[in-house]
Length: 268
Image (cartoon, rainbow, N blue to C red; front, side, top):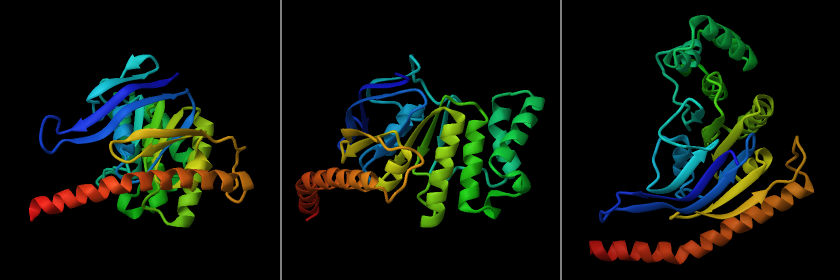
């Protein structure tokens, strides 16, 4: 497998009274060029898991390997798209895309070649002189993806990249990202809490349970592409995933109530 997580757990504030168990006993394998979605409610550790794969954060225990090598800190081989796209407001579209190449010390001539290539590929050539505040949400997202892809990563990690978009633009960008994945032939891992989004985009959906985050079930999406949201099999899979998430919500409810009561008692 291309990405391997073995018995990974993550605890924040370990050894203190404020410690939080974010992830526990994560076992996950991802194939090369596979599109995987991490699906679950807020607080289940989806984003934490993505950051561990990227190397932005370190696991408290366990092992993470990519292409047979242990993950030791961030790398340009693992592109990361944040929810807010993390564009530099003082740089133009051209400057933002070029930034990573300059940091990687790619020769200037090659930088210009890649820049022109990705500006055209992502429909940004006419907007190359604009700043992030002058762009729509969809255009900012394309800039962030182009900036990551021009570094030729082996894997692209996306943390709820459509959260700030309206419903229509959200669907358009889902379609665009799937096209990018098909064209670039690299591994994609995307975090979402949207069931339809996961079904539309993923080869496999990793359903996670509330804190401490665990993998409840991994669901293979055996639907032909391009996918239709009104397809009977799509609707059936949507119902199954919603049941999984609802079941987990019910299981965690008594614990959540008891924790709330304990906190209230401690403050009284």
